[in-house]
Structure formats: structure tokens, C-alpha cells
Image (cartoon, rainbow, N blue to C red; front, top):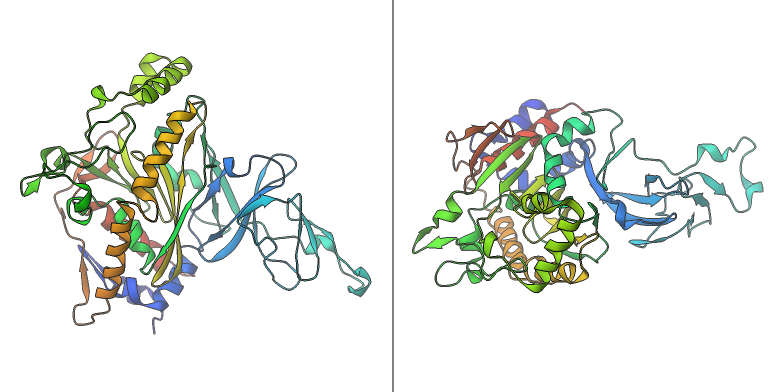
Length: 431
């Protein structure tokens, strides 16, 4: 049994390696729900998912059910999805419109700001019953950046601006690709579960080492991956004979603090990218922002980004991926295609089609990763070997002046080590 003391937790992480227990111990998982997911800033959803008053979206912060809903004054509220009478979930659908939210159990009715506005058979309530005392609880803190909604279940802690820090640039990089400067996550969702710990997906997001091996079926005989963007004839060169390709080696990863990180963009033939659909999009973007700015936007530097602990933004096959821990060995992943507001519908359709090929539950790429996570979880049941190695590139990092952050090869494990430093900070902090 884990007692959660600073000394006990500290022994789980060493330079370049972590204990297998961080993936397999149910007690550690329960402590993560309290100390990490119960206190950190978590991605909730995107404002585009609730465009009109009364529109709502339900999800979980850690394992706590919440409602993201747009109130009549157009503000976005995040409320605990728990009736204040007997505890039932008030909204059970994943999304919809409910200007008034009614609990199915005893019919209590709540306004879209959480205020209790209706109690059937009110004469049964106590003489001092006050509806103001029974509204749906709001999450203690909520912040929005360019439509991305984040919340914290803790009333105190690091500020949102300090937490997000340099990762704002990763959101900007994606949002700026839309001619209108706005994104929409309204094109559906790929939802799947895998039998493995949530941190396996979080680590994998910024792991470029596994690509030539874990995704070998996506690489041609000459070592080139299939094209993953509209207008490209070929994808990235990842293997040259039996070695990592030079183009793949030059990619870098960045440890942005607080567990966040990103990998630099894959080298592709940007100057040769062309198709009628792509050219129409380029023209639409240039018409809004000018040709020079459009050229800059269309050469993004972010391949994959992680805002720790629960959301990934991908710049290649553009999408937002939300990681939800269910149990120590069970994780849900939600992949949201991104629609660029103001772009021709043909380019949005092309982006979504390519995402279906790469990151849907039955895609070329994501199925490989889910299988790897399952095998890792099974392998870690072996108790004769205690440690998991994350030492690639340890000591070889340099400092990037532009981001003021440690930088290493994308095939190293710099960002994974950064995740565990943040993990340890959360887990060692007294409850």
C-alpha cells in the first residue's frame, strides 16, 4: 500500500528511469487523480463545441464528470455534472442543447449558469431550504485561450498564464492557419479505449524514436512514409537503409516546463506542395492575412505538441487529442478533427479524410500505438525488472535561445523526462 509520502513517491523516479509501479499500481493511480488531475489545469473543450446559448458538452476532468455550457450572456461555464439533491448526473448525453437542465431522478431543474430554479413538490423541503445553496457547483477556476477552454478543480495553484507559458505559440500556430483566425471542433470525434496506463499515450505523443519501427507498415521500401497532408506527393523520409534518415535526425524536441513539450515539424517538400484544393486554401488565407504572412503560416514549425497532462495538438494531421484516465490500466482517447474557419470546405474535408487514415480507431498509425500500449502494460506485469528506461539523450541536451527551453533530438527522451519531473512535483505536493 502506497502511503503517499514525499520520500515514498520520490523513490519512484530516478534520472533516466522510472519505476514500473507508476504504470501498474492502483494506489499510485488514485493519488494521481487527487494530486495531479485534481489540481492541474486540464483541457475541457473548445468554445466551438457550444456555439449557442444552452449548448452543452459533457466530459470528465480526471474522473469527475463536468458540463461545459454556454449561458444566456454568452459566457462559457464549467459545472460539476452532479445534482445537488441525491448526486445523479444531470446531463447524460455527450452534447446537446439544454437552456434548462433537469435531473431525471427527482426533477430538480437548473439554469445554464448552474442556479437551481425548480424543485418539484417543494412543500416537502425544510423550512429554511434556500435554492441559492443548491446550485450546480462551478469548477473553481476556468480560463480560455483562442477558444481552448481549460479548468482546474483546485481553487489555488499556479496561474493559467504561468502554466500555459510558451505553449500558447503552439495553439497560435494552429489557429493562425484558419483564414478567419478561428478553429472549430465540430466535425465529430474518434473515440476509443486501450488497455494501458494514461501516461503511455502522453509519452508517445512526443516520441519520434518509435516511428520507423512501431509504424513500419506505413513506411515504403525506400524509407519514406505515406503522404499525410493535402498537396504532398510523399511523406517524410524516416529510414535510410538500416539507419535513421538524416531528415528525421534533424528534428528536435523541446521541454517547455510543467510537463509540456513539442517536437519540431517534419521536413517535407513544402515548395512542391500543390493541388487544386490546396491552392484554393492558400488563396483564401492570403486574401485575409496577406501573401507574406500566409507563406510564413504555411511553414509551421510544430509537428506535435503536448499540454500536460491531458491534451495533444498535432500540426501535421491537424487534430486535438484528449487523454482521459479511467483506471490504472484503462484509458480513453478522444480525437477531434479540426475545421479551419474561413477555409474552403474542400480543404477541411481533405484534412478530415487524412485524419481518418492516420488517427482514427482503425487507422494506419493509431492502431499501431494502441497495440504498443497494450503490450507495454502486459509486459510491465513482470516484477523481476523494476525500472523503465527513459535515458536516451540524457546529458546531451542543449539550450534553445528562442524558446529559453532545453532542447534535444526528437528521437531522444528529453520530453518524457520533463513529464516525470512535473509528475513528481504534483505527486509530492502535500494534499
